[in-house]
Length: 478
Image (cartoon, rainbow, N blue to C red; front, side):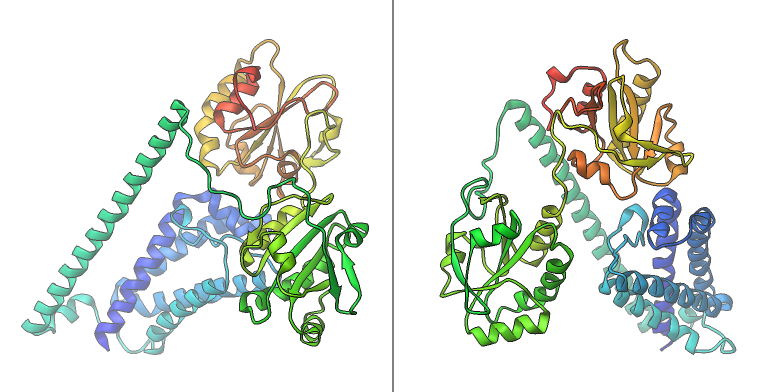
């Protein structure tokens, strides 16, 4: 039991220490993560420092016997606080990045995050359960109490673990090196014009006519593609199958999408099987537009890729490849409800964003001078790589250079730290990025003196700087 408690203390100390150090190394990301969990803005700066320092204090306290109980109690309190915040976010349907280990590892929270924290809570609770009055065993005292055989076994185990860690470290660096070599090979192939044939898309070719169909509804009446288009010109067909567990797990989400996006598109479920069974399933999940095929004739006509799978039909034509699986269908729905990206010649939307001082600026009011609209993110590594070149251009622009306007995410203080002279607008929900069709950051687009889109979106440092320097004819933009 003593050895297990010492191992638990060591493991918790390592986890907390790593979490604290990585958070301190990425203060901007830490503050953004805290903000994503709904913490008020005025608490972001102090909590951005207090949280990692508390983790480091608990990690240190767990090492020493005299303070181990207090370290475990603090760890337990921290973990319970984290679990409460994660639970509230999940209940509200939000999944912010946990930023648990800074830039080392960050992923959206989920129920697996709660399970992991619950395990750590159990470990901390085990130490707390021993009681504050019962003195904890020190690592040195425990080692001195071991017999020669136990000490030899421990030394062998530690050596074996060290060898295993070294092997893992070697494999990690080998894979990293292999990844760098692949990137260099891709760059060489691109420069030489060598292209790798892409895998054939799943489903019918995009922009081909959507196959017509006439299927039975749950009221036994025939429903055709043209009838669905009278309700909405955008139609998502989701192919399901009786007895498909993945399909069953998705139906509640489909019902939610049907209600939430009813004004934007029509979502129809194409299934098969017994009419009464499908009626019961539709009633259970409150589904609409459930259509039944005799066998798999409609699924085959659209070249379905297993179940569940889905395809977007827009204007009577195939608008996407087939999305196979629940995650791919979720992504398809997210893209289907986005507004159409602006095209060259379209006027800039009348969207208002606050600048770093809280003053609203309307993109639709940009007139009388060409504007370089730059999409930015202070925590984006690619943005930081081009920051010096961009600021040099800003200090000494060409005579006919466009004015610079930056649309950025992140906190005001993080954007101020970038040192731009130009106005910086904050777009927390990435509305402008979506409307202009920017695929990541950095990206940029030119607006003419009438406030209309005058170029395609340039993505990456090279294309952004080419737009800034007026060299659009020498670069291929997306």
